[in-house]
Amino acid sequence: MHRLFDISHNAFARGNDFVDFIETKDAVAQIDAFVPAITELPEALRPTLLLTPPLYHSLADGIADNRRINDALLANSTRLGGFAAGIVEPKFGDAAMREIERIAGLGAKAIVWSARAQGVFVNDRLMADLCRHASEQGLIPMIHSAPFSVNESLERVWSLARKCEGVPIIVAGALASWENVQAICDNGGGPANLSYELSGLATTWDLASLVACGCSQRLLFGSGGPRFLTEILKIVDACDIDPEGREAILSGNAQRLLMLGGGGEA
Image 1 (cartoon, one colour):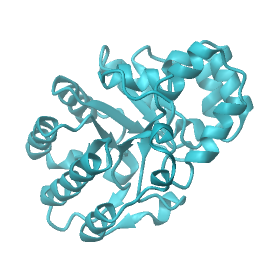
Image 2 (image 1 turned 120 degrees about the vertical axis):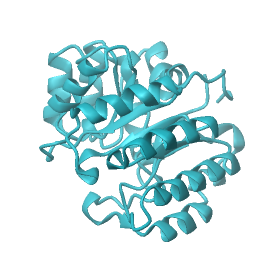
Image 3 (image 1 turned 90 degrees about the vertical axis):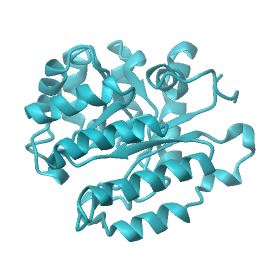
Image 4 (image 1 turned 45 degrees about the vertical axis):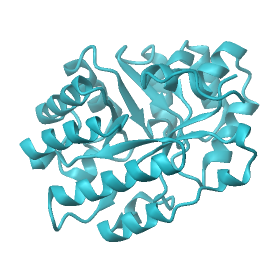
């Protein structure tokens, strides 16, 4: 089986979205000093990480703050043998479009947006334009969906997906809500261009429900950060999933979406 791929490894997350604001200079220092606990594991068992940006960070210097965080993520993904997902504020307009192009050229694999942190509705036309532009540059858009947020509701994410038909999009954090899990199951996974990472997943029952309704090829292992990796992995390990579906969730779906090679063997 391919090595575990963690598509949502946030070195900044402390487990409370409302207190995860970080100054840009502190974010850069934190990622530069980041040593994930997985380095204590034997090489063959270490997951490949897609490093993701902080949810809230200072923007006193505008787009330059985005660039500093993106550069730190890119440099340290190389250091850690993984990959980077960048961040771009929608409100920066043409400068945001150019930053998408810049980080794509530097080897980023995805770009993460959280509408409630960035002052825009998830299904705004601007977000659709940004997602399409990111996809054209070879980046996978990753969109936060929070069950308690009006502008990050699952319904708005589905609306965005329909505006971006044919653009693969990863939904982050949606499975933290039992109601979202039920909606995904009842609607056959929602729009066909969406996949869902597992961060926030609480029970084996929720995962089993998603697998039973045929979503194995649309689920990706994502921890949300180093604190949560083992918890999510235990849920996957405890779930009765056929070998093909298990490999797809743990690594295969991420490899396919990010257009990666075979990766290491576990």
